Amino acid sequence: MVRIKQIIEKFFSQKVDNETKRLFAEWLSAPVDKELKDSVLMEQWEKECYLSPGDMSKSYTAVEKKIRRSDSKPVGRFIPWVWAVVASAACIAMAIFLKAPVVQPTLESSHIKMLECYVGNGEKQVITMSDSTTVILNSGSVLIYPENFGADEREVYLTGEAIFDVTKDASHPFIVKTSDFSIKVLGTLFNVCSYPEADYSSATLKEGSISLSADGKEAWLLSPNQTLNYSRTTHKVSIEQADMDDAFGWKDGKLCFKSASIHQIIKSIERHYGVRVYLTTGKYDNEFVTAKFIYGESVDELFSALSLVIPGMRYTVENNAVYIR
Amino acid sequence: MLTDATSLLESISRGDHEAFRTLFDMFFPKVKVFLVNFLKDDKAAEDIAQDIFVKIWTMRASLPEIKSISTYIYRMTRNAALNYFRGKRIMVEISELSILDDTDVEQEYYCKEKELLIRLVVGQMPAQRRKIFTMSRYQGKTNDEIAESLGVSKHTVENNLSIALKELREVMLAFALFFLN
Image (cartoon, rainbow over all chains, first blue to last red; front, side):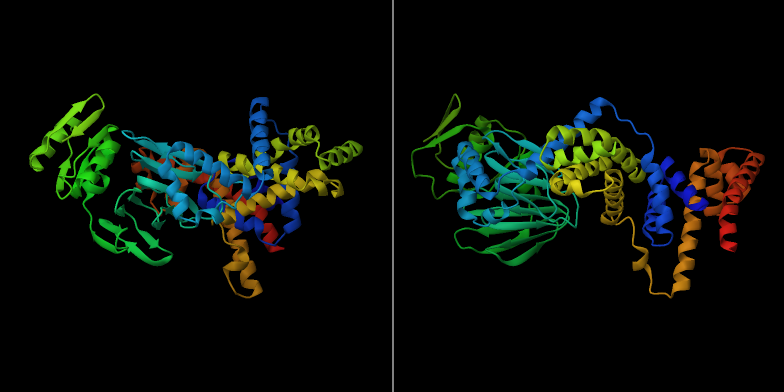
């Protein structure tokens, strides 16, 4: 009896390292002397305890909140809520639900509150999630994610482009769902690019490892410095050596074009700078540009450079708009 | 007190939030402090304590059947704490450990118990003595090496070791007596 008392009283009264915690937990849950251990533990329980009124109300409020959440209504309510928010944010966000019916079943966990982050053109946003995963959202993107990750997989939905730095947790795989593919993350740093109007979408891995599946079949496993490209026109997947500037540069304000058409360039510029670009001729449709803008060039400097590369292109910049002739 | 407890539980089972708040005020401190001392992690203790009360509310219908609410909440708390360690893979159940026969398992158990007690006694020693003892017994350093590395006299090292051993002997005596029985 004495040794049981000694162990429990000493354990409860001091700071301990993990090894000691482990030994104690194993010792306590061992069936030997079960009742004696329990009665000594109960002595600890009976001790006088005091918490400040401030802490008590904070804790009680949190309990009430959790109770309300677990009492809340089932599935039917949530889909309309998400639709309403998404519709008001941007039409492009609708694409993610139209194209990926897989969304609905997941929302069945009725007491999970979903948050939505919409980033407008010319902006970027950093999001930190409940598991400390950070996401840098690029312009013109929407990320939908749970306020608190539950007991299963950690699932988020992306339209647009983002860099993910995922907290390692092998028991709760992190999954990014886009309209074309799902990316299962195994603790890592990677970029996903899936804009609705583009011909392709891609994912680039910097550290760790990720596996992708598209159309519910196959899995591609990416190693660091690889990019997976998915063509929406041919539905073909290719994996190639990554151009890190191309994939991750946007977070430092870099713009990269690789055999990009004038339309793709315009779309990128509109998103990146938050300006409107007006193109009224089809003259440049067959021009493809490869260029990197990594010094934080202004709109003017950028177009000036483009006009050197695209023969005959002329432009004027007026207020927040660019007119190409 | 008994009547009070019974009517309180009745009220909660009928959905009375005021009554629930009263129960919360009575037991939340016990739950939270117990968990903090057990888990040594304030955030985890807070989360788990809150979850326990959410659970109590969720199963409020069966509350009036409970004979001793204090014992009941204690058990929920104790189990939650052990589950936390299991979930965090901090520990492995003794039953999982081996398929040795009874006497071996018993011996292993008492060995671990002894080790646990030693660690706890050492953990309570003042910082310097703990350091000296750890370097001597767990790292196998000589008294000279310890004196040099800590910048103290050899005499200090010897003194501290002697006090540490004395403390341990006193504690282990109770242990040994049990063993000899």
